Image 1 (cartoon, rainbow, N blue to C red):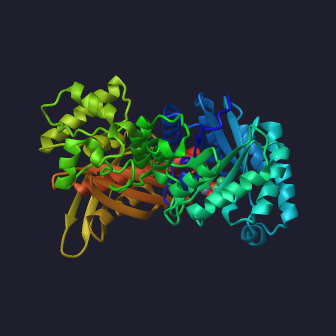
Image 2 (cartoon, rainbow, N blue to C red; image 1 turned 30 degrees about the vertical axis):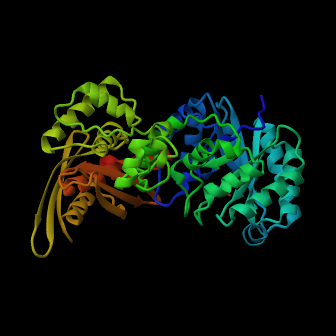
Image 3 (cartoon, rainbow, N blue to C red; image 1 turned 135 degrees about the horizontal axis):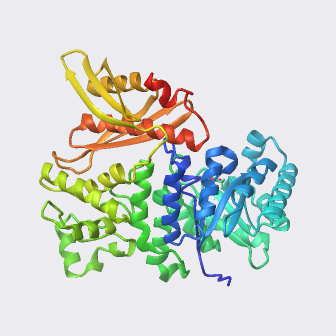
Length: 522
Ligand code: KIV
Ligand code: ZN
């Protein structure tokens, strides 16, 4: 039943979030995230933009097939091809939603679309009607709404409703709005549309000025009842509105907002970690709600206050966002039971075989290090348990490096289809030399877009985690590798990224070079 006080959450991590520079999630990773979002009870998952590529189409289709409790949405421009592709990708969804958008601001209409207002209205009528003839539920967005003339946006929304849209989205596409102004803008538009019961207004805020959550909340005050956002605020430029921030503001300040939500906030922290790990976009320690320091008290006065009465310095409880406040040190004397509890508290559901494998690796690591941390455990799970298996899968067998005062030399041997492939190269430093040796083996030349090594903990004996982003033929993939030896971590990350490049290519129905594994063996 329609509840005018209920605020719905529309998660676009897999569509707008994935548009963040350098992020490329494969279909298995997207499905893994979608399943956790479903468990967290977001109301809608925007799974992708099916017309964008065969890979995007497949992701939406896979998610539509698997996710049965909540709505699955596909994005489309007002073009016929986009709308038919989105509708087709959503065929197996239990609750499909087609999201049609076109820009409504003067700057976009004149310079990007080169359409007059009347032409844009005709596009909306056409696109929304077609979408509605194919899919039961249609959302319409006026892109760059916040810089649109409110009277024109009202007209556009009226046309969308007449054509069958029941969700009207007000995006602050470029993060230009400020809360007070946006409240008035949304209010004016909502009142002006005079929509019939059952039509919901939505907000979609970007974070260019760091105001996305504040603007989303202002819109809710104005009567909006759907918030679009992403986990960790991931997205283009400054990102999108962070779902965890908006929902925790609504819950913590329920006295002020007086609205209800269905989202299970206890899943926020595990989902945040999952998204950070798979996307490679780290969460800053001071990030609101899900940062590693969000519930940490350093100052003695604060610690004293919290010990005396928690609410002196805590407005939310760590447990309410699924974060464990007590830090328990796990080490080589810890049993499987304690290990399982820690793994579960980090948000992983490993089956017995996966747990046994992770536990064995963990025990070996305990022999190498004095103390292990959650970050070490997460790195083991990401690297060793959830690693995707691409069609062409290289494994690192061995490597050696020699570093002199000038050039460094490296020899690497990889396994492909049970066959050992070796080569050697010189380079500027050991990592560069090893990467050149790998390129000689795999016979393709991916470009390193970014490379960084981070200590999984702040101790000198920490696992080093290397992250490398490779690009090749317009595709990008990120690889990770962990080891207490940073050169080994870097080599593992590169091999992992190469494997994932093959996965990305396969997911998109593309071939990297026609050489694939066969030529590499020659
Ligand atoms: O930011 C934006 O305007 C969008 C639309 C497609 C909703 O992402
Ligand atoms: Zn957006």
